[in-house]
Image 1 (tube, helix red, strand yellow):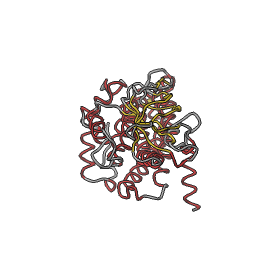
Image 2 (tube, helix red, strand yellow):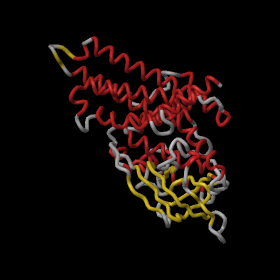
Image 3 (tube, helix red, strand yellow):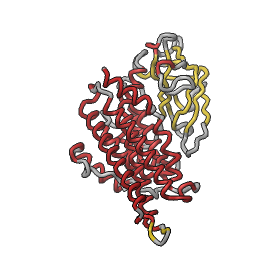
Image 4 (cartoon, rainbow, N blue to C red):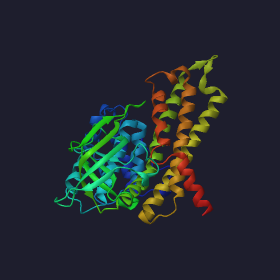
Length: 373
């Protein structure tokens, strides 16, 4: 089941209705390629969906959200890999002068090149400006070749990515030296390792010891590139959460209609109906916030200065999805905690969305700060 633009037509244009139809035809929950990390990007490329995250020009946030809601419903794994493909592509999209840019981006659109986005460090998560990775220019080189020393952790697409956009300080100890670099997965001086998770996602570490890299953009432009990229994609985290919550609700409705206790369907109990009402209302409220924020980003672009629509959407949608999926587990009873069941898997997969790309607490600070001025 894919998202519809008919529910909230005031946020969408004709192109979004056409995209919703494409997504409905292309994305299937039972598609095995969407549940295999190494096959997700080639499959999405074959379906023509990677143009959404690696477009010729500007990322359309409403289109991005529609795609992530559909993928979140079908496969949280595919949604995560799809989003990180976009995070890795966006800094290159914003840097026309980068050598090899078109080759990388066209390969990313076709699903032949998988990208990663390496920002987080063991001691620098939300506090991006405190990152410790250091870059130094190779003397006598062409000016674009650098060496990086440092470590990145909790980096998505490790193990499947062909290249990463890595952020390091090219003018330590000054924070204004933070810059973006492109690092090939097989670059000299790069060591990749996996980080085990409670869900099956390709997450890992980058350890860099004189790692060969190429500068993306200007020295000192990295912080702007990193935060600008996250600002575009943050709204879509809420859309993915909505997709996962909708999947949990649909599974729960099917379950309570078929399961009988005390001589009647569980669906006939008033407490069950009240829980379903809360779940459905949380989802609808989240969708309104997310697509309002997406419409605002598409309208204002880089000129948007009010952080509240995006922060509210990300905070409310991810927290609401956690509530919806928790109720789904409760209504499934013992089956809800059985390994491999739909809602048990969703219960594990929804939790990281409340952390990455700005925790719920950070979103509250952004909202509160904007309110008090």
